[in-house]
Length: 253
Image 1 (cartoon, rainbow, N blue to C red):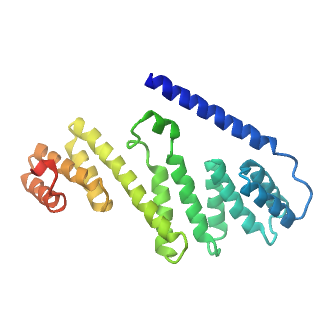
Image 2: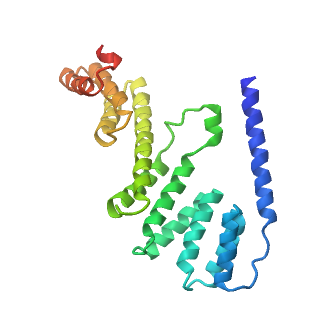
Image 3: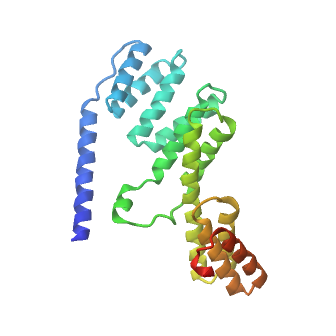
């Protein structure tokens, strides 16, 4: 019954998404021959109405017809946002990469880094796996690493940016995601008795992803690996760190 329920939910979601896509596509029409500013007003109206495909169509037309106009940069910034909202990660990343390459000193460069981070974060979200309750900690974290680096750029290079506070919060969440991946890989190695590889992964979490909730699991993994390897001094050191930071851990009771 539970599996049937999940399948029904997925089917309803797919039908709902198809309906939204059809309604959005119905709004698409030939972009009229108007001034860049007038078209930008139309594109903003489409964005405000949630008609992202229509906004993309208009903004792309402006970008093509007026590539060197006074509003060309703003058009590209709006287009990045439209790609993000429409879920077109490939186009969004490509445009942010191009913008950063061609306009490294633009006044809104922090926004571009922020949007690229959000797009990469979005690629990590898989609604279907979440609904099915599938653990995703062992998935390739490349997108998360890219997002983390962009958010770090905002925090370090543009600390006064209006996106800096949110960037810090998102960095913490991503740090946990990356740490979970390392722990998953460490467990994989441990099960196969590759204790040195496992302990290296766990130690990496302790060194580079503190503070995060996964540090406790990493220390436990290090202790277990050192015990298997017969490295009593290193085991004692790791246990001492565990006692100091996580006194309620069941391993030291």
